Length: 264
Ligand SMILES: C[S@@+](CC[C@H](N)C(=O)[O-])C[C@H]1O[C@@H](n2cnc3c(N)ncnc32)[C@H](O)[C@@H]1O
Picture 1: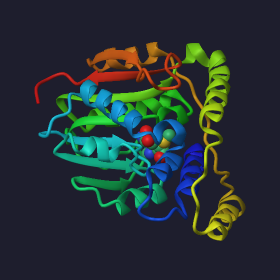
Picture 2 (picture 1 turned 120 degrees about the vertical axis):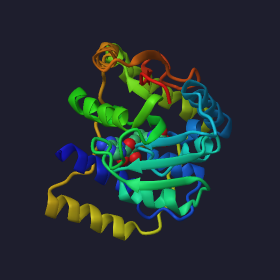
Picture 3 (picture 1 turned 180 degrees about the vertical axis):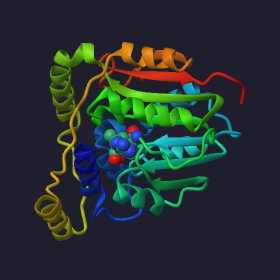
Picture 4 (picture 1 turned 30 degrees about the vertical axis):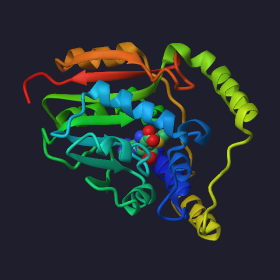
């Protein structure tokens, strides 16, 4: 579980020292998303709308977002459901999410592979742009099994933004092309002003020196077949689809929508 410690430290460091309440730019930064794309309200609205359609969100639904960071997607999603819960392993990111005091939304610090919710608790479960940082399909399976356990019969779970293993080679080129295009169109991305850089430096030193934890995340790729097999094994209806068409990584990433058998 060393990877999870490194990942947690990575996202903690992005969130620590950001002024509350965070701006949209700050939320993008904490999520590791390019503000020049994700900070545009029309883009964010479009992504939320595509999630709303795929998950068929309704005001009667209890929704869980797994790996919500500081809640970039929360405001958009929570207005379509009856209740929204967000969990993330980064305490600092969850603190920022709570500081926004969004109506109908609550946040907890939790590991996605060990969800502290009763079985069949949610109607809809979302995990968006999280698996890119998960180092093995064995762990993806644990996360999806937990998502499945807490979803009611007839409920749906959407796993968004999975790096397509068949595109591993071209992904690096796409990454470079997207960065170049955004720099040309908008100039370099601005980093948020952090209040307490001394505190961040001390924390970083402490984690490295005392715990031997290096804050870092990897970038991992998965096969569509692995998700189809998981669906088959658990009797789920599986749909594999493209990420949002305006996503800069369209064609290199995919989404998986699972429907749990039974009636809600
Ligand atoms: C790239 S960010 C995406 C955040 C958000 N879903 C979005 O789309 O803006 C990935 C988030 O997943 C969280 N995460 C990764 N692995 C996790 C795990 N095992 N349990 C809980 N959160 C996790 C990270 O802490 C980070 O905040």
